[in-house]
Length: 147
Image (cartoon, rainbow, N blue to C red; front, side, top):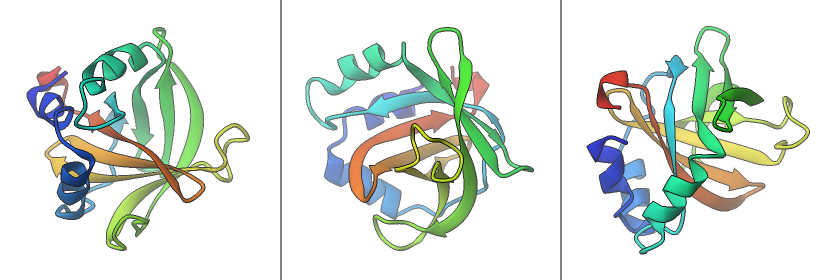
């Protein structure tokens, strides 16, 4: 896990929201990312949960040309749960973001919507929603040199 992601794990929800809102959407990513879930931000359980959840969710793989994405799950990096990728207003602040929309591509996750914005070269901060309810934050690191 890179140093920036480690710092994100220490931030409160308000700080993560402010960072997300201060950024532009950035380019639609392409390729393999290393993912980190940020649950209960700013608390003592954030890091242990992130480490534990790494066994189930590993990150995402984007195909920018096809505007598609799938999640990497389990220690074997199985590609599962596909989403359409497009730009739209964020549910958090109304500014443009990159949306990962599962509504038409997954029976399991059809109520899930992820949004991401670039916070550094090759690094994205995301928000996950179930319906309109916010679930959690996550980071996607596309820079293999930081791993």
